[in-house]
Image (tube, rainbow, N blue to C red; front, side):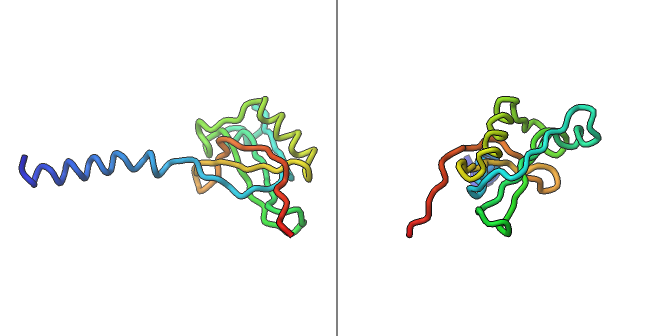
Amino acid sequence: MSLRRIFPLAALLTTAALPSMTFADSTGSPGYVISLTVHESSSDLYGTYRGSVTIRQGQEPGSTQTEYRWGGTLCSGRNVTEANIELLTIALRGRSDTQIVPRYKMGQGGVRCLVSFTLQEPVLAAR
């Protein structure tokens, strides 16, 4: 096989391998659930996204907040089950006792789409 054929084939194989690396789940900063929104089918926003959870990265009111959404046109195919919405509700109620580590994929318009999460005891800073 000539070099003229090898280089395009190598480039094609390299390009084919990129999506699996490029689109891996990203891990968000650990934090606490401070807000949970669920849109019902009668909501004007239901087609855009099904719901969202806002996570604060620290206990202090001025800490960074990040919103993660699911479903709809912004996060097509990225849905959260009713059972997991229940877990997020429990995490919201037990705010300071339950830390969440979100995992997401990027959606339309740079939206972070929640694809999984871990609930854990807060990690205490070393003193």
